[in-house]
Length: 256
Ligand code: HPA
Image 1: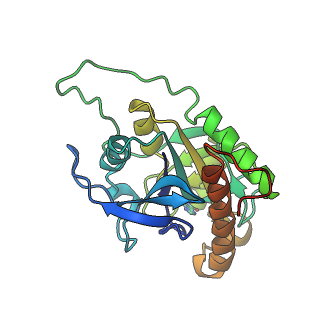
Image 2: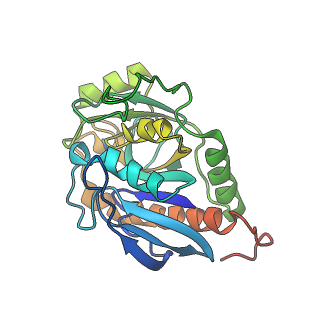
Image 3: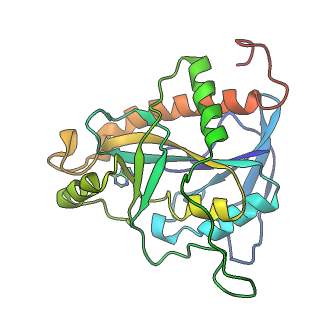
């Protein structure tokens, strides 16, 4: 069963036909909320809002370990992470959907591993390719079936937040090779890998990164909200297609 972690702009999954919710107690504390179980087009899926149901948990306070542990505990077969980002690369416009293929981690002070030396051997996961190739392909195919444009590459810079970046910081991120900037991609991706959970991200560009384009005089999310919501509608459609086609793939064009 696929799990979807929703971020800003996707705090509920309206196309999930909910069967039940479950509060999971984990050895790492409380997840961001109850895991919601249901079906999308007849196929099972589970959903967890990263920032909690009232969107009250800031990026640096999210209990990423509890979230991933809870999904693993419920036998998730993979995790799709949805998150909004700032666009650094010149071609990225608010509303664009990007499937990042690499990560640079600038976060600090977050509990970022399950292997913290308590009661187990030191373990170093391979993280050369942080996102799962098969899951990325499935997302890409679902989008293609719907005729929804997605950009297929991007280096995601994970910053600490909750404040946005300075213009100089964005310049530095660009020099480092980053194309997108967000606050929640790490340690989420690494923790999924530690648990052996295939993980891929769908990023929605909410704004030009600080100092760029329409953000050259500051970032004004309010004006970009309609663009973000419309893009999240497309993300929902992609997820619906992907999950609905998981096992008994309906004939092309037949699923809603
Ligand atoms: N920076 C960091 N995180 C973000 C941004 C940004 O510009 N936009 C949406 N999430």
